[in-house]
Length: 273
Image (cartoon, rainbow, N blue to C red; front, side, top):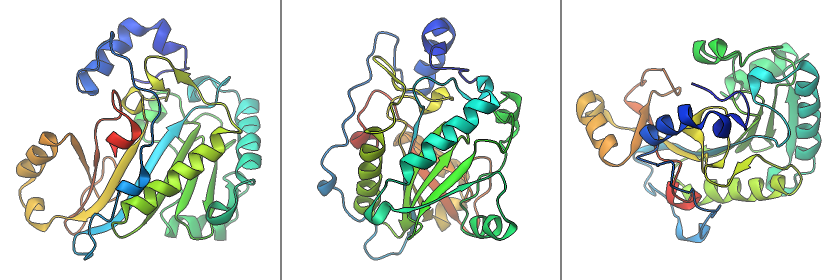
């Protein structure tokens, strides 16, 4: 189930509240998501200094632009207008975050191939997004931004209006998280985001509400890979989500799994990570 616009979470609360409670660890309709708090970045460190298990680390969050509905209700003109706003906002980023915006419309084959090789290019939505009418006017209004080091990435109008992603090889969570926090704080000054007093930041899919933060590692788990039931049991105990190497609805390749926080709501951004 997806929300067609930000207002849907209030208008159809009888439908959404039980789903939110079920997915987000008992977040009841009387509960209030805490105010945004990135916490003290300096307290985080490297998850795997020896580099034995963690292949790469990634932290992302989703944001919806205020004043626009979600994917199924957007017109082609709105898609283009949003892309223009996002592109001009991101062109103002400086330092490590400075980079290039690539619209999907009219993209050259070379650029497309390079982005595929880097695993940056998102494809037209899966069957769930297709069924939710989230891929209309494709590829109009969609685009990708990345910095020169390819450690900071923004997806424009994929599933959410914005997906902000910080990532790098190895297990240095502090560096990855710090980069994301810097970027979000900067972009937030120039683009107003949809926020709900009770539910936190609003997203197309109710699983991402609240902090919208997903912190994940690609990690080698050869022994647990041989015992899927045990892996799921351990993950569930620590409120973690297990995905395949290439993300949702994929298999693990060579015993490498994508492990992330399942909880995004009813706790701060720092606690989610």
